[in-house]
Image 1 (cartoon, rainbow, N blue to C red):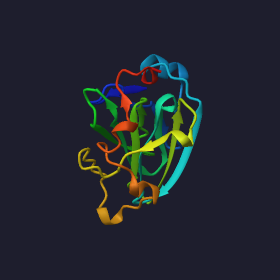
Image 2 (cartoon, rainbow, N blue to C red; image 1 turned 135 degrees about the horizontal axis):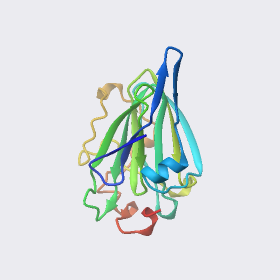
Image 3 (tube, one colour; image 1 turned 90 degrees about the vertical axis):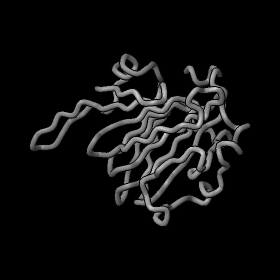
Image 4 (spheres, rainbow, N blue to C red; image 1 turned 30 degrees about the vertical axis):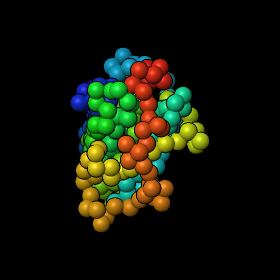
Length: 192
């Protein structure tokens, strides 16, 4: 397993060892021991899976306060652009984002710590995402910021006319408008 640092501390790309031959391939997609040794100690408690068609943009979602979540995201089928936005007030990288292509061919995974908003765009005809969370989902503590906030400036790698959004994702506030819902950089929630 190879761990690649990004421009935002704590957000890392993981490339598992893939062993292939004429029959196909084998890879270890998750090891608690290896993750704890190579990335950081995290106890994941929930696995999620979503399937979406080409052009879908989901996000930018997060969980507030003590319900915040770290995520480990991978693509089992297809190709997506996976995005993490630092929404921790006081962070030296506040408002910046990391965008990484994840696919069933490159087998990459993205680890997103607590205090980040998460979203993705589907670049293939369809995509199946699987992601681990270190805290349970709490609907009443759900938050989001606008997928197209110009101050964040995410290139979703899709023509605007092809983008498909849920009604909910069409109406999120910008980062500046969501200020009261964001996180403080030195809060203990994000150490976990």
